[in-house]
Image (cartoon, rainbow, N blue to C red; front, side, top):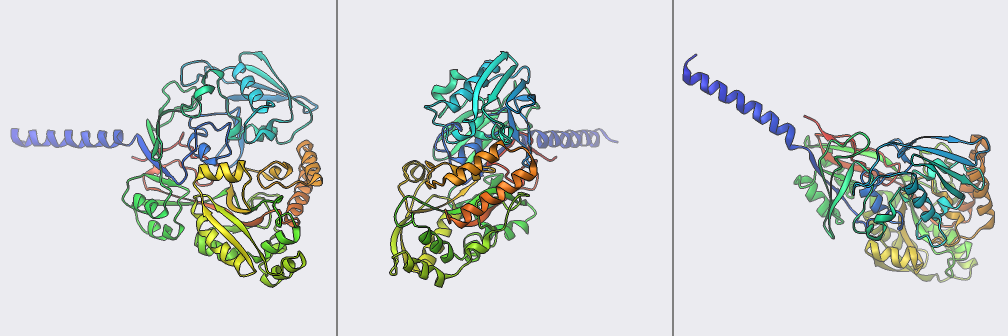
Length: 495
């Protein structure tokens, strides 16, 4: 080999090696798009699932957590013991856990977090998860006991919610803008209206993240979502809002399409205390005016499973009650006449940003108009919806997907935004909370699902599918959404 040929060969080898090294090193960051931007960054004081979509597992952690299949697994607690009477849980915490500001996480922080969530002045949106706690005691820095006032078969499940993450008293004042948790990623920056950035927590107590930098981009418009993904301006879009475009991505080798299930019961939420919606006959008329198939096809392009009650079809205890609210506009008109509204009435329909709500709202408004119910429709931004509808209860109808797991218990809360007040249902849920035997729980859940379906508390539409588009090289994304989260702790790029 000549000197010149040798130089070329060595240079080529170095170039190949350098390119391979660059290829491996280049993909340690990711940009993930979401449709909804969080109103703030404290998961313990708001009902917005958009907060968990960014922060759950990534930044904040609880004693337990949901795995990708919905199972409840250890989180900050590595193990626990339950007393024979089911009233005392002793949690053993992982060692060496620190918050992102460098301070240690211990049993005192657990006590603070749980006491804060259950306090009389608590603003936790899921305060009901903690009402059964009668005492939280610190045994030593790595051991804490929680005493309940009665057995609760859902307690470990409840602690896995984003509303139950562990926070430090020192960081509470600024938590809405500067969240400090214990997760594999730490908060870096928030450009409101655009993006949130996270960086890898180099002092993470558990298995470190593969990614060094994460950017969450917020793209609410479905057309813009399609354009951003197709141009590869984003690497993944979780909860992709343009289902009609999925075949185009499936045919493109640059991308992978994951279509999973979610915990999102999509409902026509109804203000049960606002006349004439406080009349069961009127609510039943609304239910029979709705053609679920037309909504699923028109708003979701076929993605969605019809439901007749507030319960996920993939749950083994699900009861198919869609027959109680079959599409029957003639029956709707008859029921309205019986209720004293032969010429119909007018109410409000307030729609949050997701495409299922905006698109579904147009279809439902037309279906209701066909039986004499006029809707004054308004499109709200997420913060407006939370203020007017969720907190202010200033609405007649709205469309929203409840993405919290196993959340039928919200119907036992008269002050919840749709204001359903049924003491009999409340007693059923109280009994369910104390039940630990699977067959007993199954029977109670059947009664509970049937009761809210027969009371036509809300218009039950469909279980939200969860489509995700991603670059073909991205691996480790959740396919299903057992809770509203975009867990990136195990995501990486293939070589």
